Length: 427
Ligand code: UD1
Ligand code: MG
Image (cartoon, rainbow, N blue to C red; front, side, top):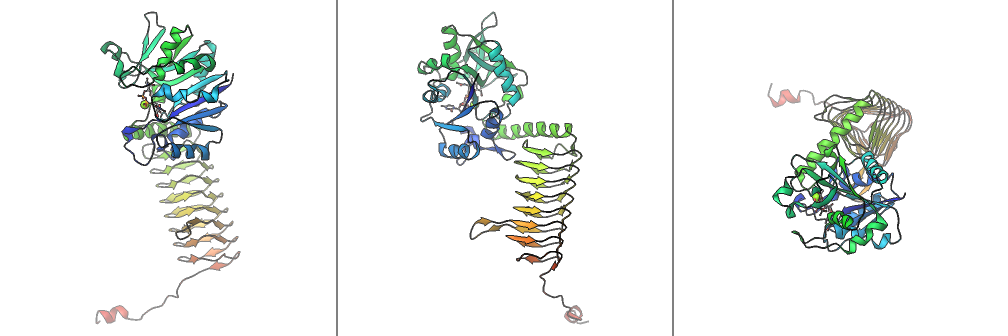
């Protein structure tokens, strides 16, 4: 059965206290919250609809540039989660498959969990399935209210709940699977007579019950996965949770992480066996690291980085959008951006690729071919190529292409002022 996803991302995110960035575009390890959610559905749904409202243009731009299969639908004004989903009704007029609804601020949900959730929906012949979980502290979540026989009755929002209902620890995770053609009529019938004056998506549960549909809850055991981001504190906490999960995966695959407390690695990074990641290393975005490499301590890989086998990226080295071929060393205090480094290249301490022209605002590439050796404190002013086997003397500012197997050096000749110090000191 076909599955389409609807991701709610129109809300204001008031508690993030951000004037410039909509909530779903805040980042964890270089990836936006919305990016996490889209990545988790894109492999098993045929189409994604992202409901946008606050900062709609920025969110639309992000979706368009990064997820070509996804569409954005504007919700303006934002009258609640039920109203948000109703925005896709015109696009899904004759659609007869499943709709998976998620929130754009829940980045920890796993693809495999969502697949199990959909399987549960199908195998129970469910018309509406809602994901729930048990929270010791259920504050602020909608509560799952069940009949005495355990079947689902309705969802009550915290603000509408009686003290008795507030004591319920089973909460609504905000993820739903719907047989679209059966549930679609609900969206023209939702009412906003509640504490918040909003059209609640949660009301489709009681609507389904009243219309004799098969309504079920899927209880998620690992409640971490539905952790939602509403504040900067939540963002920090979710970042830790995602990082911990990533580091565990790398270690399981044979990567040494010397200190899990101070190492950060994005989920879109791959790392080969027997590579060692030293403390205080921060690796964000999409990167590929080979086998038997040494990364850090205090290395920063900013995304778009490919590092082949047996490469060393050492202390205080920053790398961005670059490929470093095997057996190459970038040991200390260097910046490598928009570059390609060949095999067996050695980069002396303090080498900088000057990739950015502040006047034209253009970035340019630096190419270092195999067996190139760069002396310490070199500036490579891009665009520039150092051909195979060439050496560059320490302190050189490389502004022209360097021929193969030559030495390039730009240094004012060293001179001595004999007895200069002694004269100053009158000795
Ligand atoms: C919602 C659920 C609650 C559940 C919780 C889980 C409702 C009424 N309540 O509450 O039962 O426990 O999620 O996290 O659904 N949004 C829109 N348009 C709107 C309003 C919201 O797109 O008009 C989006 C928000 O951007 C957000 C999501 O919907 O991504 C959820 O909205 P939010 O206001 O955070 O709902 P909660 O109060 O958390
Ligand atoms: Mg919320």
